[in-house]
Amino acid sequence: MGIIRDWIYEMGDTFLDLIFPSGIYCINCDAPIYNKPYGLCDSCREKIKWIKGRTCGKCGKPLENWYFPDACRDCVNEKHLFTKGFSCAVYDDSVKKIIIDLKYNGKGYYAKHIAEMMYQKLNEQNLQIDFIIPVPLHPKKQKERGYNQSYLLAKHLAHLSQTEINDRILIRNRYTQSQNKLSLINRQKNIKNAFTIINNGYICNKNILLVDDVYTTGNTVDACCKEMMRYGVKNIYIITPVIGKNE
Ligand SMILES: [Zn+2]
Ligand SMILES: [Zn+2]
Image 1: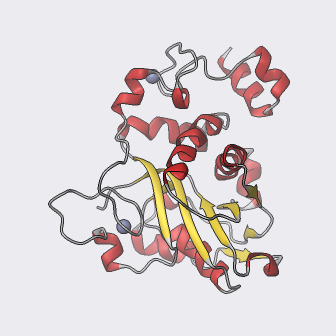
Image 2: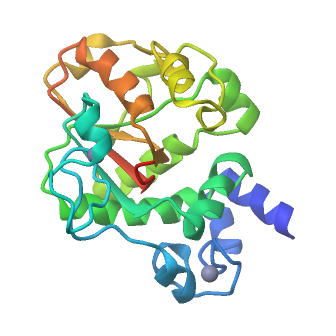
């Protein structure tokens, strides 16, 4: 049943969703649920470290109350190119399985539930967004995986927020190794110049919301921003469901 259910959800068909409705099992522990926020049972939802209170003014990582600057250590040491980043929860063991399953285990249908938390976060800000752009995957990797999880998150977020999505402007031109298997220096090298803008007149003077699955060092989104800024983009905001803590 599991494999068939996964395959059917992959189809993303509303008709099939009527027969096999999503939101009946917790996306983290498989417990039966009915109509719970984010597709999570109460227990899993309570374990997640939701980001509220003090955050880094740049990337949105949570800050301890005793910590002095308004930016996290990472953002004090490294200048990021985006205007501001937002994230829903800390990337720890309580959410790891959900993100890994979304990215690598064919659970593309989780995106619908995860986008609900991103929508809530977005709603708490007062942002002017012209359109949403997902961080692209290289076509070869997308073919291997069957989908781009950031695109799926962006698609559902665009639907919920009634915002235009465009996944035809920013493309990935280099097939890069998975970032999490590399050291910090190699990560930066690996991602540099990996993205290209096509249809370049489109983003001039626009406010963009860039969607990725996880924010860690910001290297990936910075590489996207660097390319977009060459074409006169006005503001780039970043939204991810989860964010790593500073090392
Ligand atoms: Zn659960
Ligand atoms: Zn920061």
